[in-house]
Image (cartoon, rainbow, N blue to C red; front, side):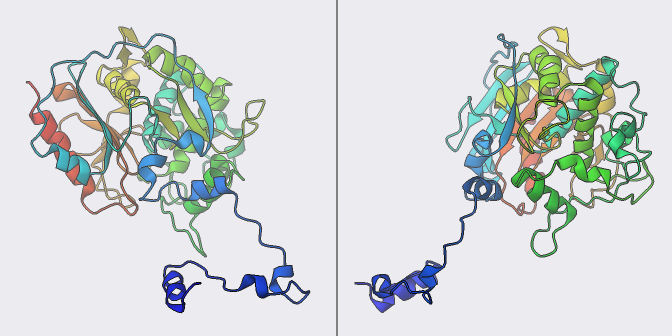
Length: 413
């Protein structure tokens, strides 16, 4: 028998208590005659709790179990990524790694792996979510579409390739403007849920969680807030438009084009995958699309291969994978004051960040502490895959960068 004190304790913990249920007759007036509410779809619930701090370390490497996906197939032969002499890590490395919520970390120096660390029961076979590091990858795909002649010029309006964008906020916006996050559309990277959700929150819930709309569809009707090119405004919707442009310009689904033109030539060691905003359709433009602004997943070493290719001006495995001139454009930064939306950074290129004052250094950056940090002066690439809680702890980006600087300072000159 449950004592009153036991029931009170459970109620205080938020657990409902029903006493003597067998003694209540199921009459027409009884609450038991009302059919129970239909439970929320458990897949939707998993998606809603994807970012929860107590489980995100696990979720961030198991996104294929939670979302619609599109495979990006690799070739049968991976490009070499040899091991070099082990790096002497800073004495406080373990403390720093814990304080900055590290899941996995890779250091490549002079083309060789000098440190590799998997934490929190992660493994080399896990495929980790990139979040907005995917934007840097999407920009590379734009460069390849230019090389292939599928995009005539990045100064073309986006509506040339996606006519559905005519008449809205993206009218008159060039591909270059979108690459630089200077589209001028009325979008705020602000995720306010609740009774009056922000546009970004609505897109997240309807496209990513419920798959009831395509992420990029709001680009058709969004308003204009500023003249294109006039100001930097970080907007994942811009990256969704870029993915849409690549799809329409090439006539291929993003995953297929990426597999053929980037992932296989790169020599990735394993298939990657995109999260998508709905089930796959039979034709281009049907069904869900790959989430080109936040949805790519891959192994730690393959993210390292992307960084190493960028460091080597587009070369991987002895071949030119991405044009060197495109890499130069993509990693040339336009300086700005710290982003009002995100509070980080000193400059931005094509979907790529300048985070610090290190000469020539640049980064792919993703939500919750995902980084591909390229430091040309020391010939170093650092990949850090993390599980920052939300909201992000104050000062954690600066602490992360300080750790990167300390790691580089300890490498052979």
